[in-house]
Image 1 (tube, rainbow, N blue to C red):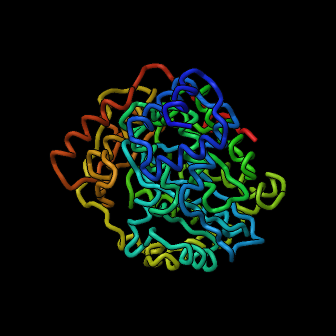
Image 2 (cartoon, rainbow, N blue to C red; image 1 turned 90 degrees about the horizontal axis):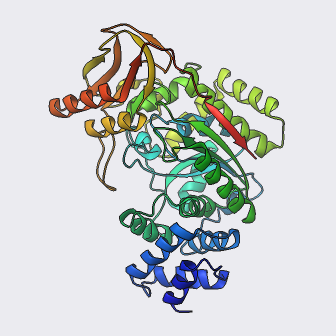
Image 3 (cartoon, rainbow, N blue to C red; image 1 turned 180 degrees about the horizontal axis):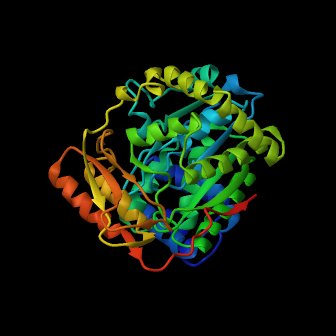
Length: 434
């Protein structure tokens, strides 16, 4: 079938045979289809969607467009992972992986970098001196053997089709497509042969999914893809109406994650970590959620989860002393506070604006591949519903550049609403879909 015939079928809402989808994806990867035809296909999908069989075929074709990790040494072990759709202050993986690995399952986590208002797990880990995220398959297996888990970046040979299609989606206004988002995420996650996957689908002002309906549709779509490909998938739909925890940045988020493994964490952050960890462990060990939660709590109270983190840092080339000595991390020394302009309740956040303020400081990036400054960032000092007085600190801003700091302060003041009326709070975990 010619590319134009396939585009025409999708434009007219017809179902494309799986073999034709595979041939099309292969042709795109081998540059036998010009970008304008690949872009036309994406736009047709954006408007027409995909049938379940088409979507599984498309995801599978992307998955097998390059190398996959066999991870032979892990055969017989239950491989489980977690994926977040992105948010502000979302350092969950940094705590979750060592906590769950301390209880037995192995976690081969292929993670990403921050872009736009959302932070990236790899950027936060690279705050650690020497920490390496660009690992070969052999190094991934070695790190898991030492620490029970690994957090690594996508190699150039893994799912190359996704890189091509994502670049086209970014410039053709097709990024919001539920089907294309789901296929992109699942093709990368399936590249390490997972047995189980727990999804953290964010919804709210700081999430890509702004409404509950879209978040549920994305969750259900990814669950159906995973199960069709032989992976057990569960999804937690969680609120991103305000930054998670206190810290927003890189090194400061890493510190907050380590603190949870020491038994000290903001309540909202601890709640999300324990919810996702419970689902992961219950799935991997075929135990009840109550038993899973008890195991995770013991892993923290006994210090085993913290030791698991030390082992991982050492296995990936980093300096494990950072776990006990935060002075080894780069943290900007200059700090200014943004204060409340009036009395009232913290009523809401434009959470995406908070994330963008962090980017302005240098903690994030607007263009893929740009460097980040691990030392800068901010603290969000109040949660929705808190009472504040005029002059109370709302944010701590850690900075290096005065002009950038001034712009970030302006954005942060715009991001927070203070009201005379006490707000109604959304549930932090809105739904769990299994």
